[in-house]
Image (cartoon, rainbow, N blue to C red; front, side, top):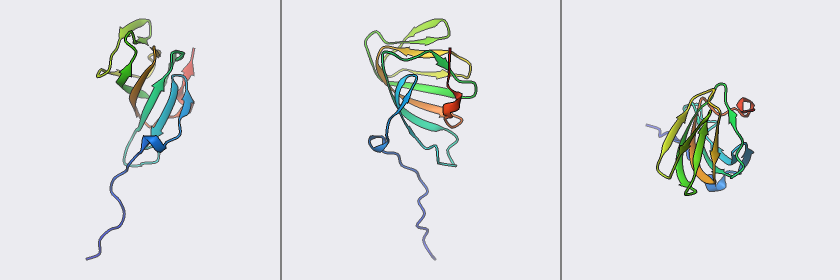
Length: 120
């Protein structure tokens, strides 16, 4: 019996992924090329100049790793205090931005598309 040498898993080392500028700050994105995973996984460092934006197709799930003490999320016209250990699902069409510096994990479905970032 011949053993398969093809790996059945996918590994991302975010320290080796180049950061990309986005309306929030800098995102490191993984798994865009993995057919078995219907989304993408991002580690994003959000700056204090994050811009209000929305997506027409993408659902984002933020998991807050690190936050300023007074960090908030703007979701449409509502401000929500956030802290490390919290998570929020942001469906398509919700205008959103982070207020304060933070570091998050962002799980995006379907796969992230930079053409689906809309600024007001």
